[in-house]
Every structure is written in structure tokens, then in C-alpha cells.
Image 1 (cartoon, helix red, strand yellow):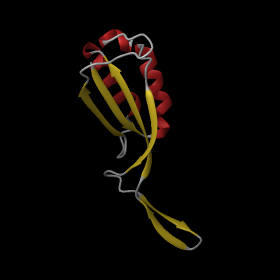
Image 2 (image 1 turned 90 degrees about the horizontal axis):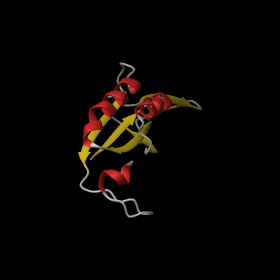
Image 3 (image 1 turned 60 degrees about the vertical axis):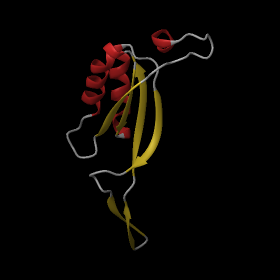
Image 4 (image 1 turned 180 degrees about the vertical axis):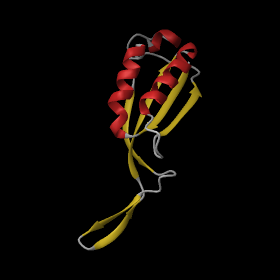
Amino acid sequence: MVRIEAIIRPSRLDEVKSALDELGVRGISVIEIKGAGKQKGYTQHYRGSEYQVNLLPKVQLIVVVRDEEQERVVEAIEGAARTGEIGDGKIFITPVLESIRIRTGERGDTAIS
């Protein structure tokens, strides 16, 4: 099993969720976050004052899938989240040693289906 974390633009969330739904991925966590990368923010004017906004709103998706599903899920996220501009986000993949469904006690792959 692998944990796939994707940090994407909030405006692309619906497209990514639809792409994952088409693959049959059901378990997904979504967290609203703020971050900075190559975009480096922007300058904004408020009541005559100028200030830098360098932490931009992003969305973090977390999904755990079987090893054999990894590439399809990553391709789906990447394709649905891409705009071709700086700030499209990142995808991180880490191994998952074990998963346990608390309600039933199921372990391993059966706990994530």
C-alpha cells in the first residue's frame, strides 16, 4: 500500500475528485492549507497600503491505495490538477506498512477497500 499526498489548487479539487471517482477510489481526505513555493505570492493593496501575500490557499488530498493502483491514481491526479502554470502543486508518495479498519479490525488491503 502507498499513501499519495497531493497539494493542488483549490479550483482543481472537483476535477481531481471526479478523476479519482472514475477510478473507483473512495477513501479520500481533503484539507485546506496555505503554502508557498515558486509562486512566491503576490502584492495586494488595502486602504492605500501595500502588503505581500506569500502564503497562498491550497488543498491537500490524502489517499491510500494498493501498490498496483499507484500509477493510475497518480496519473489521474496529475492530469486533473494540471493547468500548466506555476503553482499547480506537488504529489508525494510514501509506503504504508499497515492499515487497520477500526470498526471491524480488518487489516491490510481489505481495510482500505
